[in-house]
Image (cartoon, rainbow, N blue to C red; front, top):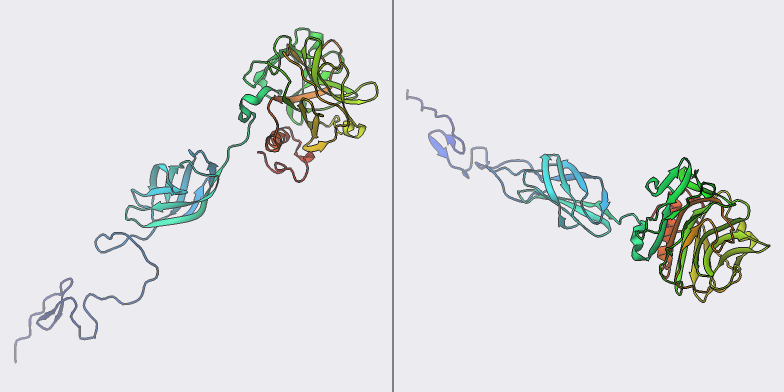
Amino acid sequence: MGIPPIQTPPQEGIGYLGFLPLQRGSVRWDGTTEGSTTGSTSGSTSGSTSGGTSDPAPTIDSVSPSSGLASGGTDITLTGTGFLDGASVTVGGSACTSVIVVSETEITCTTPSGSVGAVSVVVTNSDSQSATLNSGFTYTAPAWAPEDLGSSLALWLDADDASTLTLSGSNVTEWRDKSGGGKHVAQGSASQQPTTTTFNGRTSLSFDGTNDLLENATVGITSGSYSGSFNVFYVATRSGVAGTLLSERSGGVVAISQWANLWGPNYLSSDGTNLWSNHTISSTVFDQLSSSGGLVVHVHVSGSRDQLWLNGASRTVDSGTANSITGPAGFRIGARELSYGQNWHGKISEVMVTTSSLDSNTRQSIEGYLAHKWGLTGSLPADHPYKASAP
């Protein structure tokens, strides 16, 4: 009887059959090949392997917030799986900054600048595997603001900005211009000072229709002339015959914006050498600005009939041809110049004057801004571009 062979424990990568080792790739007794695996896999990965093992490709589940300004600088958080140290992030094809791989499931970074619209977000791991979330981030345009009007903004009075009002109790002694031109209006006489009130939840000024007014006795709104165009935008309410919202003087002539029923006709404006208002509107249009308030756009183009929009819709101006005045030397809010009174009766919430020709996009942007701010969107036409959202 022979001596049985000594059994040696198998080693990794080496098979034994009796005394003879099977090298990797040799055929076993059961027909399989040493070093092979059974079963199947789905999908594919790319990149390097370590120790013969591939890390799974990353995935992106969400980006928060999912939108930000096209100027960049939005801090975002990506959630997903398989994020590795050293991963990079692009948004719309441009690299994010301040990328931090918080964990295998979270990355934070700051967006680069981009173009308005939806773009893809891509995470690329240090092993070159990547994940893409299509339309994962949307670049948005900045909200429109009056400052965007630049040098054409000649006057901007905003009653809801407390920093622009100087008060004595509830009386307004000064209303400061936000255009940057320093065209502030004031009133030293207590009996002529308007008072603070509210309109649709925001601070507004109440003018009594008798003698309330604010003025700048030395500086004109345009500091030049009305030989070209000027445009008056305002949010106001009207009581009774209303009166003059804004007027500017030069010697014996004025340029004004009214909503006044005086001696029968309904007047929109008076300008140039004509003492009486020479632009009229119908009673139907006149009555549409009431105690419930409205948004008025009054456009003056020298040599033409004035144009009018009320709550974003064009209104007919029945008569008149605009004149020009030169060298304005002061203006009033809430009353006519030259001691004719015609004081405003109602609330004045915000006033803007621009001095460039007015295109429809700019007009509608200002209308949208004011309507959303002052709760007047319900009065805008259904097809107004900023009916649903502010510019």
